[in-house]
Length: 305
Ligand SMILES: Nc1ncnc2c1ncn2[C@@H]1O[C@H](COP(=O)(O)OP(=O)(O)OP(=O)(O)O)[C@@H](O)[C@H]1O
Image 1 (cartoon, rainbow, N blue to C red):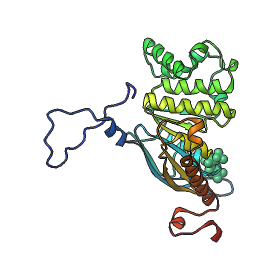
Image 2: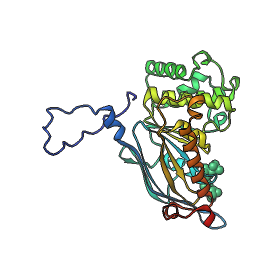
Image 3: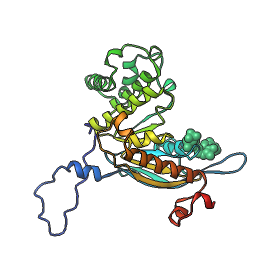
Image 4: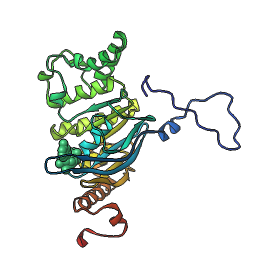
């Protein structure tokens, strides 16, 4: 991935295996197996005037290096709460988040976040280039390196021609591209995206989805993408983590076995896509009806509740 990726730790030798003469670089496959982010028993209770609100009950899952995982769940399921906890912006009541072996206790240096409200996340007095450059300046990246990364990121999102323009001179979709370029130029080890395309039109949204998959492919960055759109989660993800209604647990962790090469027209019209969408939709309906995974395992159906 990026040049800033720390080298992974060496693997212990298998019993009986010949001792290697020198440490070898992990294969791409080994890197993909490595857990990058671990969410362990996370619970969040908000204090409120009307009494404590248990938003998240118990969330546990891992995200491997290089994975593109989506999180979906009904409205109010605690998606934003979870994301803020992962991003170190909110403290869990119990449990912890571990990123690259270190507990998260504040915004991690190796993480970038793209929010839904691109309008508020860009500085109107800075050009496109200035917006992308700001976090790099803050991180004291040398000028020549900054210029290279900005050029590459703007090229990747198709905005090289617009680098001197100001955010208010751009469409909503272009502004969100700037936010993505800013995150990519930072070369994070993990990119969190919180419903980033909820405020753009359908055609722009489809283009931006393809952009995310393209960037993920080319840069190998780990992506955790939160959305309330089931179709989007299936189209984008290698995996979809379905959250229950609040107080939240993981309803199901679904492997998306669609081919790696995806196209808006063809992939979305396959039976495999329809089956996955159907399954996730059903799970979310169960979640909304308050049927938790243990009941599903015991064969409880929506009609019986
Ligand atoms: N600061 C707060 N104080 C009290 N309760 C809160 C607070 N923030 C969120 N909640 C409650 O926690 C639960 C989860 O909220 P959260 O915003 O994380 O859900 P969400 O899945 O992101 O929702 P949506 O999809 O509608 O954006 C909700 O019941 C919400 O009312």
